[in-house]
Length: 107
Image (cartoon, rainbow, N blue to C red; front, side):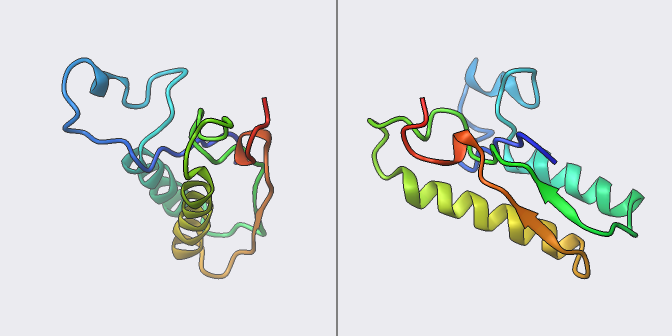
């Protein structure tokens, strides 16, 4: 898996037009979409040797220098993603790599 860019702060009740981007190209996916993807993967692929997350798991824009308190959200996202995968694939090793969007001030 690569470039998930999970947005844990996405809200479905945010109002027009902000919530029209659910799952659209060039938009970061909300938790509900990532959970649906993982559920579907676990249903169709139950015999996987290992899962490699190739980085860029964090929402775009969180790693800019002016973003306050970015590290707690980055850490929360990585931990959540790792745990969500482990819950669906309890006997499959999960290898998490860090991408350029997963660190501060990468641009």
